[in-house]
Length: 178
Image (tube, rainbow, N blue to C red; front, side, top):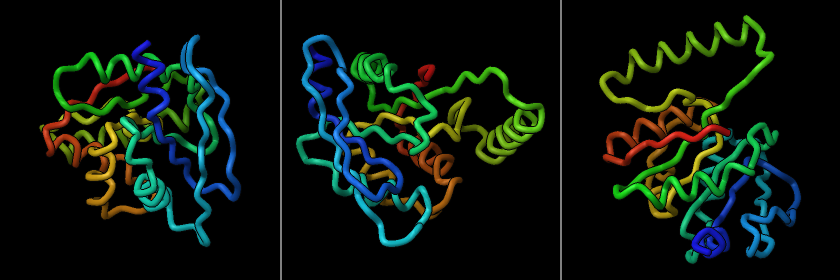
């Protein structure tokens, strides 16, 4: 299937791990397991810089790059939908995860909404994403490299800059529930 072919051309740079792992998630009924190589960074350089380093090592045969948070907060089973969504769009795009969180504390909800309002105000009129801080993003490889090479923010706020740069580059920002 098309998803199996795409899945075998997927690089997944994780944040900062100290070992390599094999990822055995079956992307579709006909797919094989996908080996994931995790880079070891000598020091904590921030999430944005760590992802940028990982993306630079994405295989040239990779069609897509998936970024994700190291804590596994997003369910990778949505990857098939994200790939289909990206391939179905006629324009260059990135697919951003949109988290649905139940049992969220009032403090966290207020902080999230406050940050979202700040981002929307500062980035107006660009529409970035409803969940700018979700680390689960699917990029065509060439756009991931281009966007992460332009980053100025190394820490947690890099997500907003990536989406901002994508908007300025006329990439369509699609969303999918994770």
